[in-house]
Image (cartoon, rainbow, N blue to C red; front, side):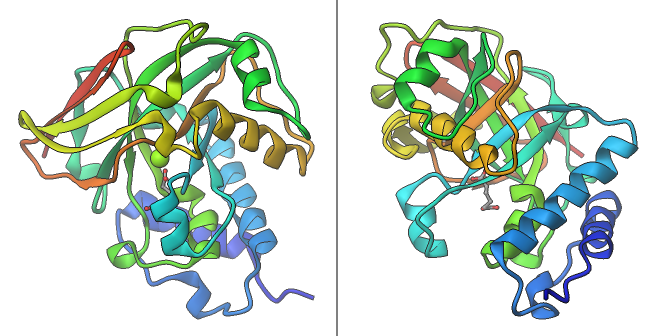
Length: 261
Ligand code: 0L1
Ligand code: MG
């Protein structure tokens, strides 16, 4: 039987987020922690936030690029949850004081027109159920010192979820090749990274299908109206006060924010 105390570990990670103090990875204390244990801690963490009156706006996929999966030595991405308090308005300000050591990555977000439920969901089925896609910038802020974690650590930490900026322009993906969408991520007008939709497990809709199939293991489905982050098209870039950050997604539009103290 596992020795991990899910509730107290979730409270520990929640405190790190609210006090903006990074912590050493939890697997140092629990070297035998499994992926199942980690998702149970994540569930407790989500419950703490819900108990405080926060609302989930949608789940997200993480570790969706070949590079990140190779680095973490995994074959399957991970998921976490984005809450209402994490939303920064398009063109608005991200407060550095509220965070530890944020990084930004450009993503494509999906909003479904109808619920979808795994197992067996495919990218084509996701596209058929999608109402629109929209450019997004995800701000990740691992609660671990120097972003140093193992797979169970990062899963328990809600996949480093911290903030999100959603663009204003929505697009029906019918007829679009989302795997071919070119994306640039710029800071203060300088391109810091770029990529194509295919960086997200071959196609962003495949990522959403994988998410539906993973959530089905615990009896959850993807709900119509949720804002679902499919995963990073670009690498994650460190943020500093004074930065103006923008992403341009070919055919989908732009999204931006600035970083203030
Ligand atoms: O959204 C993501 O892909 C982040 C997953 C966690 C890994 C990280 O913090 O770099
Ligand atoms: Mg992400």
